[in-house]
Amino acid sequence: MAQILIVEDDPAIRQSLSRALSERGHAVTSAPNAMDGLKSAVDDRPDVVLLDLGLPDMDGMSMLQMLRAVSDVPVVVTTARDGDIQVIRLLNQGADDYVVKPFSPDHIDARIRAVLRRVAQVDAGPIVVGGLVIDVGARTVTLDEVPLTLTRREFDLLAYLAARQGQVVSKRELLSEVWGQPYGAGEKTIDVHASWLRRKLGERAEDPRYLHSVRGVGLRLSPPENSDE
Image (cartoon, rainbow, N blue to C red; front, side):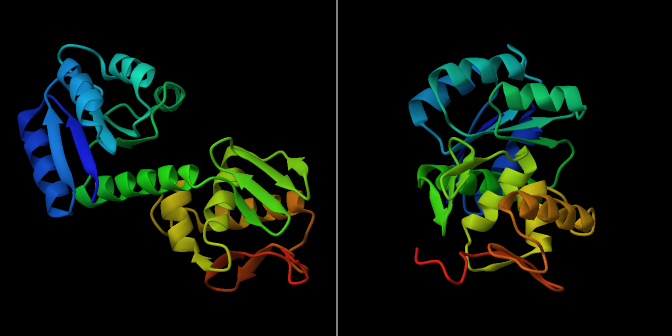
């Protein structure tokens, strides 16, 4: 169960979201405007804030900037604006994720849970898999003490697999949790990113050391068989 603060000016949407998230096991509070939302975020210390951009007293983007000055609470933005420039601005201002309206209760619940899992992973400290050290908070990776340069998506894929080392993670799960896409929307992109990641790990699909493909299922990250770590 998470403590969720909904900042939304539309009473019908606010009530519907509160009810839907409560039914899914969360404790929910709400605020109808930015200033009340800021006060609740600081005083009540929720686990995550669900923030609408179209607020009556202040643009949601401005509230996000003010909130980031006093709190590192995870923020999921709800918006009708889905352009690339808008999304980049949101993420650069400190949003942890965003969803485009309209969305289903199950969709927003899945996004909230994914953000909370990422936060828990960051708090847990670096992940060690053989000679790989993945620092999720700093977004850095070293292999045998040599820094690796990864793209944002390569890092996200590696970190997700590393947190589940030794387990086979399905493409369905990777698309949902790493790419935020429904299954079938781009399975091939996983293969492409896995290929790029292998190259940077200094291995090939035919002779993997860390990143293993399980045909028809997904990917597994595990230390080399001869690793003493």
